[in-house]
Image (tube, rainbow, N blue to C red; front, side, top):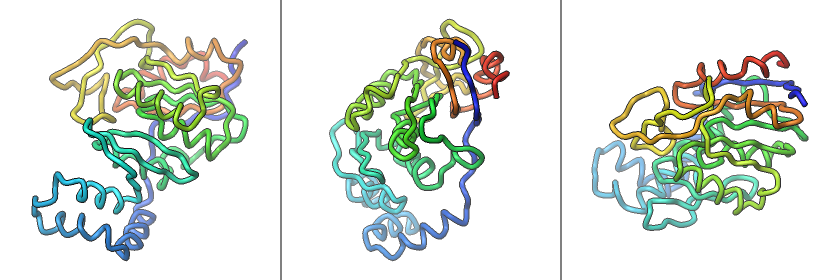
Length: 241
């Protein structure tokens, strides 16, 4: 059955600077954020790699860390009682999804929708769709092996296994294989921007994925510069926008 696409959104939009400033003003009133701000503005490295510095930095961005482990992973409690495990280098991505709503400036998912999350990372937007917007199903696309494992783990932690199809694949303009270039940051691996290291990953078009679905209502794309290639792979599905 051909997909019925009602809404479509590409790439992430810049958050409101005013919203960010108001939020930071409120956070300034809370002592836990002072450790981070003191170290940041005095350029002291005394606390830079300590757990307290990381916790205070995260708190200054509205992120509540509940625990660490030796693999530089943080357990984070999000709004709506959503719990995730995320690499420490990816903590800054959380406010963009859960506070500033970067992906929802034009459209947003609705109850009962089927959503495709292209560039799912560890599942921040996937879990928001399920918990906040009450969508029926999410197809979460993430090609990097470590991110994919965390994505699966976060889905399980929040008991959404029956409503998420997680695919270890990259989206693009063709089906086959491609080089995924590895950034130092877990959320910045790219098929477009070249780094020293890379791995070979499977790549598929959205068209080929949509053929297996009865409908698609919302597509979010955040793939570090490769968005145009992803859209090229949506020639059939774009007819239903």
